[in-house]
Length: 330
Image 1: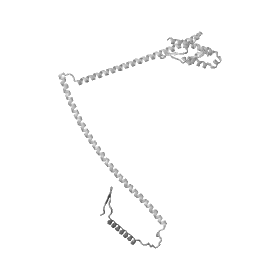
Image 2: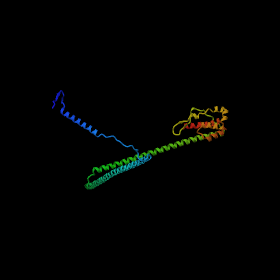
Image 3: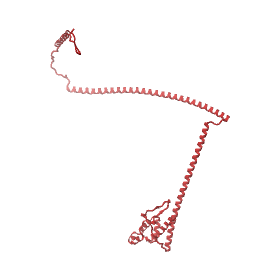
Image 4: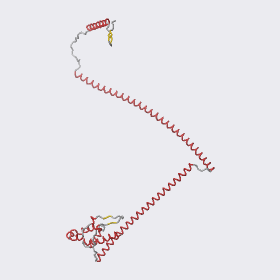
């Protein structure tokens, strides 16, 4: 056996020479036998007689057979695919049926369990109800017996009855207070309604009195005109340019832009313009200056004055300012 040589960090072992040489001889012998076997079993040359291939079938027949086989192979593939699909569908249907049966079984079990729970709950409820009714009846019997004993022994009422009596009295007092408040509100509403009606009636009376004064002034002017007396025109003042109404106890001035009219003397001097305007123009000017007179009344005054704007203006102006002064005095 060879000796091992040790060095720093490793050990060197030399090979066995006899074993190594033996393995090499065996390998060479096997290689020689393999080479000899290959040489002995080498195939010889092939010698075939020349002949025409394809047999007695023509090319057209071969192509036709190939087409037929191709069509048949396609049909066979389709049939095989249909069979596989049908088997697959059947397997899926069977699996679905199994799942449905399982779910149906679970649902029936759940329903049965719910019914059992409901029955148990109903039974417990009935037992509890019966127990409560028995307790209530016993309590009522005790209370009736205690009340009879209290009445016989003339014992004062308990705190429970006192509290109920106090509650009833408080409820009656609250109801009476509520009725009183409702009655007071109703009386206030009636008083307010009567006051509003009175104010409306007063307002109507004032407007009727104003209309009556205006009509009386107009009649006075007509009588003065028929007797031949011409009233003296009154000079205009800044207060006469605005008309003050007293409908709602509030003074509201009329728009001066509509009530301002030029001086009658200036209007009368321009004879050409007066001739062009005519009857309608005179009526429009008078209606603009005296808006509270009716249109028929203004037309009648213009006819009496023969279309003379100055005379109609003076006639209406006198009565208008008189009624205005009466309104201010009142």
